[in-house]
Image (cartoon, rainbow, N blue to C red; front, side):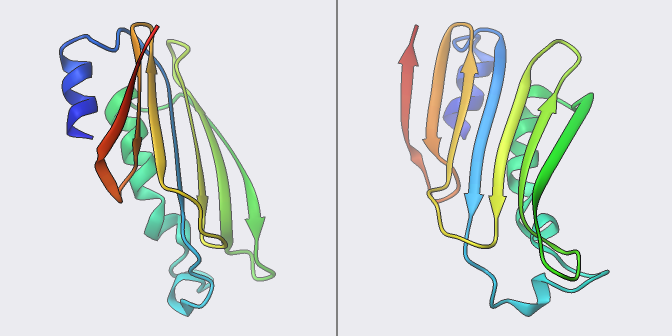
Length: 129
């Protein structure tokens, strides 16, 4: 992520228009994550994609969320869509139900930057328009 921040600071990405990420791990067996009124995967895992979006776009003006709830109302999975005042967007998938690659991308008017979010942040792809 340091490379992406440097590219943004230098203006190499242009105006950031869209940030996306995915963070999914099978944690259904971790009872502490699924306690009504206590822990849940959104609190435990959600901070990473939320922080990523905020670092590149700031605070959203609109948030839409849908996902999968357990019978007790605790989220197992969430799909989050955010919009900012200037029109930039962000979305991420967060799941404690399944294992998927941890990925992220920052798309700008100048270039797009993709990387393996969290696990191998030094493996990335820079795409020119």
